[in-house]
Image (tube, rainbow, N blue to C red; front, top):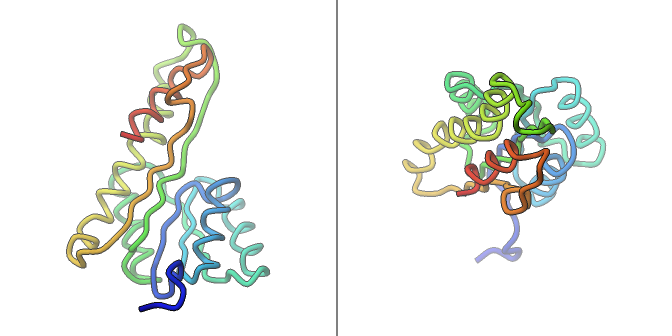
Length: 168
């Protein structure tokens, strides 16, 4: 039995949307608990800065990766993390985008971009980590949703829909 039931020594975690905010805080917490953490996001500069700050705070286990929300990119990103750090045992699907505006003025392109990030991204990344987790009969997947999925507002309808879908 472990002395610390919250210790994550030896675990590998992948946190999406971890260049700042909640994702970065989650990544720092996992690293502080002993996990080797890969941070993921769209902005390489934000990820590099986050990894550098994490290193100065004793959380040098954080690594920066950038992958788009596409099937092949998700699989390649998961493979790169596994090659660098070991098989992913913890996945935190945190990444999301929001573009505010009235629904009747929302373009098809804006809809697709939001759904790609908020629905397709978690689906493809989750599907990419599942074979290894199933083979090891171990793993944790956390999908971060939003209160907006239950509280619709006029200018965030597409975001609310995407977060409700990704939390189910």
